[in-house]
Each structure stands twice: as C-alpha cells, then as structure tokens.
Image: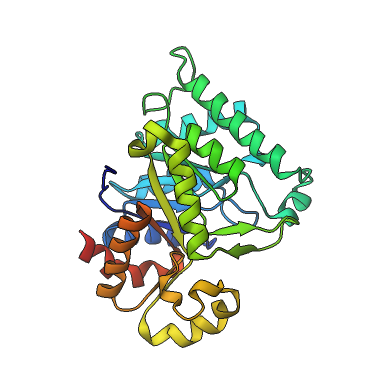
Length: 294
C-alpha cells in the first residue's frame, strides 16, 4: 500500500529585481503559507546560492531550493563547496534541485559544449555521487548543516534521467513535458504518458517507493476569469487527450480555489504527487488553495 504524504507547496522565483524586492517577495511567500522558496538556474536570472542565502536571512521557516541547477554547468567538487556553504549559512534549510540542462542557447552563451542527453545525464549522476561521497566524509569542510548534506531533488522526464532519480533522489520532480532533441522548448505530455512515467519510476524505485517524494511544477494557476486568455496561449500545445479538458493536465491548475484543491487531492491519489510548485506569477492566486489544503 502506498503511503499518502502530506502536501508541501513551493514557489519558484524567476524575476531578477533589487535586493529589497527579493526580500519582500520571499517574506510574502512565507506569509502566504508556502513551504519552499525556489530559485531557478538560468542565465539572466539571479545566481541561485546568493539568492537562497539572502532569502534565508529574510525569512524564518521556509526551505530554500535550487529548482533546478543546470548540473552540466558545474564542476561537482566546486559545487559541493557551494552547496555545503549555503546549507551551513541557512542552518540546514537547503534542498538541492538538480537537472541535466536543456536550453542549448544557454550552453552556447556560456561557451560550454551542449553534449548529448546521455552525457549530460551521466554528468548529473556523477555529480550526485560526488556530493554524497564528500558530504559523508566527517573530515570534509565546509560541513553542511544537514547530516550527509541537503535532500536531493532531481527533475526530468526521460528514461535515463528518471533512472538516475530513482537511484539517488529524495524528491523526484516530474516536468510534465519532454525536451525536444535539439534543445528546443519543452513539449507537453498527455495524461496517459504522465501516468506511464509515474509507473515507470515506481517500478524502478522498488523498496524506496514510499521514501521518495513526488513533485510537479505547475506552469499556470488559472482562475475562471482568465481561462479563455490562458487557453489562447496553451491551447495549441495541449495533447489530444486533454484538448477538451485542459483542467485535467497536471501542469495547469484551473478553476476556483475549491476546485483546484480538489484536483490536487485527486492528483495525489492518482499520481502520488504531494509536493506542488508554482511559478512566481501564480503565487498570490495559489495562496487560497494552500489554506484549503492545510
């Protein structure tokens, strides 16, 4: 029997602004009841670790995560120092989100080769192994505040990446979309595909299945008044099995707060997804749903 987890709620911050605005946003997220403040890792956005440390100084209880680091940009040994230092300076409030990277233009801008998907996933796995090995060493410095280091979230969709997640992650983040082979935009998956991905991971997890938390990144929270305008944007990208019922897709959350809360309960029952992350522009709209699910 699968253990039903309590809900957790995160908000992923993506807009670069001033120090004072960043502090205000993080405090507002905590005030609204979010459990986690996430920092994206893209060129043109704030550097994740300084942003997380400042967020910790400005707040009292929220956890801080990288959602997700483009692991291909980082040397694992140097990354371990940043992760451990951030965990130390936040008194153990870090969650380490890792991904393989998919935006080819960012690799080109950074002068870093855009390797094959296989090589990027292999680098991600070696990164996790290196971090875990260093953090398990009692002589390692700086020592993270959390024993053996922060919990690891791995986000992805393909077989190889989900295989790495099943072997190593404490949290598996389903994107609900697959990256194009040429590094282009993510392509929304259908419900049947999402169900298959969850089943695939559960089989790989085996005895770990009840120990690993499932996350989803919700791209838009859509109240009834915005439904028509949002569907103009997302409608052409909807898979056939939800074309007539977009509210069923897990990366969209549509309707009244009560209806959204009900859908999240259904998705937890169906997919086992209990950790829900929204984007910054949906933070205020999602807050009433948090209160209903508490």
